[in-house]
Picture 1 (cartoon, rainbow, N blue to C red):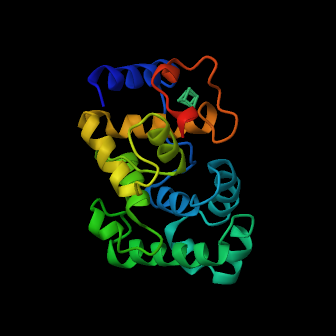
Picture 2: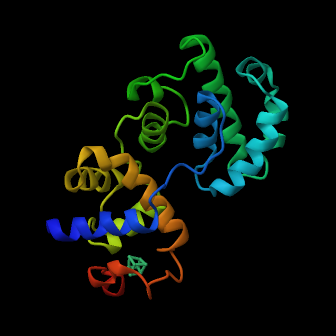
Length: 209
Ligand code: SF4
């Protein structure tokens, strides 16, 4: 991709989303891990509604460790795949408590040892909790990367992540990740994107896909 196009993308994102950040609500490191695990295939808004209830009822890691799996499933029910997610949360809470002394680990290897934490979830945690540059590729990031010609339709998430890391300066990775997520959520939506006022129209390949 031409340098001028990369600059066009980053400066446009900076102009419309200067303060982009994670929209999941959390108060502690382990609450972020739980929220990110729960966010798979569901909106952050829905996750925040559920975690409002969960974190209000179980205010500490110790209380979450004791929660009965059936009670947990009941709270997570409004989310998709809640049975599986309840097991993931139990595993995360147990590992953070017993294996990592109550502190969310800051290495990819340790994070990915938790059930439900794959590369995307680990990238969000590393970037948001520990300010480690990372680009998590979700459905929004993938769609926009394809529309802007940063990736091909057949590329997998790892390839898209690599493409983005190649074209962006490392100190922009985390910021651009959040901007792309919000751009996809509020502007470049899957259906009826707001193309009229989009400066990226000049390089966008959406109509050719
Ligand atoms: S022109 Fe439309 S489809 Fe292309 S990047 Fe902008 S909002 Fe998205």
